Every structure is written in structure tokens, then in C-alpha cells.
Amino acid sequence: MKQMSFFICLFFTCLLCMPLKGQIRDSLERDSSYTPLHHHIWNSKAYQITHIGAPLILAGVLTYHKDKAFQNIRNSYIPRFRFHYDDYLQYSPGIVMLGLKSFGVEGRSSWGRMLTSDAFSAGIMALTVNTLKSTIHKERPDKSADNSFPSGHTATAFMFATMLHKEYGTTRSPLYSVLGYSLATGTALSRQMNNKHWFSDVLTGAGIGIVSTELGYYLADLIFKNKGIVRPPRTWNVSQDDSYSFFGLQMGYNIGEREMHLPEGIEIEGMGGAIASFNGAWFFRSHWGVGGKFTVAQTSPHVASDRFFSYHPETEAYIENFEAESMNYASLAGGIYYNACLCPDLHIGGSVLGGVGWSSSYRARIRYKGQETTDPLIHCTIHPIPNIDFSVYLMHATGQNFGVKLFLNYNTGIGKGNYTYYAPQADRNPSPVTDKTRYILHNFNIGFEIDALFWK
Image: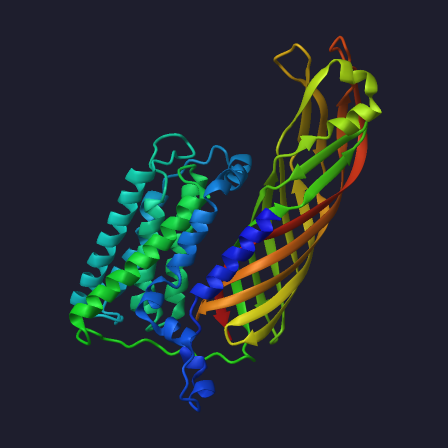
């Protein structure tokens, strides 16, 4: 319940912090002289500066103590990943922006106004990041330094992505925004893959990069006023009948207790653990679409000692404890997606997917009393698992091409595999027994998703 409460609080904080676009509500408001208080808040400069970055910073703060769960995914699947392209990738959105400007593609601002805005943005970002790094002293995952929080690479990448968004995404095509933020997201993921940052580091860094750029452009606006605006922003008009396609990144947490019953009275229990998914769909009609999802998950289980001792009471006299390896799971699924618009910025929907999953080989070990080392108890080799995946979500469109979702997910699969069981013996000399087994997996997940939206 703590994980569920955390993600619900996070999402509704995002709802409060995200703008509702005035362009698509003018027809509802032009007949009334009364302006609600929340419209004053949404139209305020403070809100416009912080409405996207602040929820990311808040998410980083709230996930600060859940970092190890997400880092375990990286350690389980790519423990030796070491590629330093992120040292250069962080600058790529800025290179795209300067390249467009150099080749004469008009953006929002003149050269002078743009460079002034960018200088303010970079100064605010660098000051904020370095102050936090030197104050908090959080150790990096690879233990190479104590300046992990927040991620400077991620802050830089999202700062440049927001510059590209403001100069070209809002004035020419939203695809520039999608490109910039995709490159920035790639930088954030790479910092985790390279074991240089925790999940909370990159979330907070992304928020700082966005807010710093908004502040930088605000300060430049105070100086230049209406001078140097070359191309005005495009308007966004979306009706409730419009459909969209999307591609997004999910981050979530397993909720509830999961059990896997193995032979010989061995029951593996798991609670908690992180999941990460790439999720996308194309809507061929207003409410219906097709798509797919790739998911990786990890949990740290334990062996239910009471159940084992009830099957093998004689072993309680010489077994000290049990040790269980982490369980890793990946799945690829496709199917039907549904979406309905409650109001221009708020959507509900869900999906029913079918696919196949892969679970890593699993080992459990025992420690005999008076011994420091452990001995094998069971080793399972798992075959591919057919699975069914059900999800429901609530999405808030935070802009023309961005959305944030809260999702609930249930995934189940029937698996089979081979196992080798080492029956515990007082003399520590077991005779291995090999056989086949079947089991059912149940996973309940809750989390949030950040989407790139493509409207028809």
C-alpha cells in the first residue's frame, strides 16, 4: 500500500502542476466574465516556469529512497555495461538547435535573444546542480565519487532539449520537441546503464534542466520584451474526438506479495521490486488502437522457511537459513489499446496484451548451522512463458506532444522448466534429483509513464 500511495500522490501532484491549455477552452469561457482562481494560477508566470520541471524534481525527491530497486534492474541485465557516449549525447539537442539556426532555419528568437536566453539558462542550471552536488554528497552507484545527486549530464541534456523545444518545437514542428526530449531521455537512461547515477538523480536532473531553461528565457524576456521574436508560437487545437498515437517510458513498482511454488515444499515469496517498460500504440480509430510493450522487472525474493520445514521437519535441526537469488523477468507483448477523452487534457484507457516472457534461471541456497559458506538447494531453468497483460491508465496531456500517465497493471503467465534439487543432509552430501515443474506467476504493478503524443 505504501508504493500505491506514493505513485497516486505523485500523479495527482503532476495533475495539479500541469497546465490546461487555454486555446482549447476559449469557447467555453468567452461567455463568462468570471475567471476561476485556478485559471489565474495556470496563467501565472511562476506556474508556466515550473509546471513541467517541478513534478520531475518532486518525483526525484520521492524516489530518493527507492533507488536500489530500480538499480537492481540494471545490475541484473547489463552489469558490465560501459559505454561513454552519454558524455557527448548530452549536448546533441543543443547541437541540433545551433545547426538549424546556422543553416538559416527561423526559430523563435533572433541570435542575440536566443544566446542571452541560453546563457541565463546554463548559468542557473550549473549553479543549481553544483550546489546540490557539493551539499548532499550522495555516493554514486559505482562508488567512484560522492557527487551523484543530481545528474549533471541529464540536467544539461534536458536544458538543451527545452531550448530546442522553445525555439523550434513551439514555432515550427512538435517533432523537434520529440527529437530533443528523446535524446535527453537517452542521456538519462545511459547514465543509469553506465552505473553512474541512481533513478532519483536523473529525474531531479531532468527537472532542473527544464526549470533552468524556463527561468533563463523568462529573464531574457524581461530584457528584450518584444524585440527579437522572429517566429511566434503555433497554436494547439485539440477536440475530444481527436485520437493520438504514443510512445512512452514506464517506471513502476510491484505491489502485493508474489509466490512461486516449486517442488519439495520450496515456496519462493517476493514483495516489491521495480519494473521498466517501453510502451507504444497506434490508434486507427478514435477509441481503438493496436500496440505493444517490452518490459523488464526484478524482485528480491526469499524462501518460505516455515513451509519448507513443514515438509522436511528433520532439516530444521541443521539448517541455519536460506538465501534466494534475485528473480529477473522480461516480456514482449502486443494487443488492443483503448482510449477515451474525459475532457481535452484528461484521458482514460487501457490495454489487453498477449505475448511471451522470459525468466532468468533461479537458484536458492542454504547455510548449515556452524558454516559460513552456503550450499545449493535448488536450481531451476525456466522456459519461455506465455503471458497475458492487463492495464488501465489515467493520462494528463501536459502539452501538445507530451503526456503523463498513472497506470495499474496485472500480468500473469504459466511457466514450466527443469530443476535440480539438492536434498539437505546433515553430512552436507546430498544426491541431486532432476525433474520438471510447472508454476503460475502473478504480477501487480503501479507506476507512471511519460509519453510522446502524436495527434491525428
